[in-house]
Length: 123
Image (cartoon, rainbow, N blue to C red; front, side):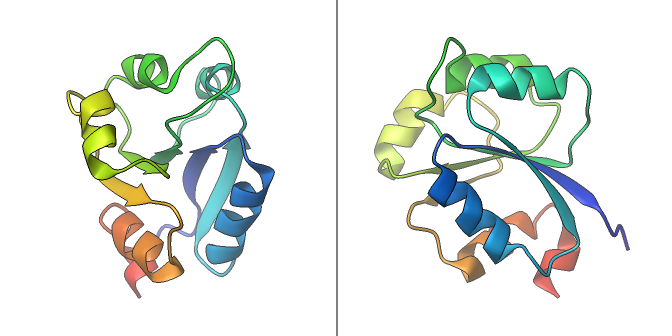
């Protein structure tokens, strides 16, 4: 079992970051948070991740779609946003997205979705 799967959570809301960390507190994952696309790109230049969880409404110079271009399908991406599914697909439907999570997300929904890539989360 991989005891430290790495997740990059790109989210500008501190409250949502805390909630995700709470949901995954007892899980075999290490979470790194970035509050903007710029910060996420800097982190990705130096670290590798098993999963990226991405909010679509990011502040700063690097938008979520620019970040998806940068990731270029090399890491499974989960979109977590308050937008409707049709809005999400309109914005990022052309990208290889592992799954879409609509806020507010329940812990069970999060674990089920991430468990597609990290099976230990389904245990």
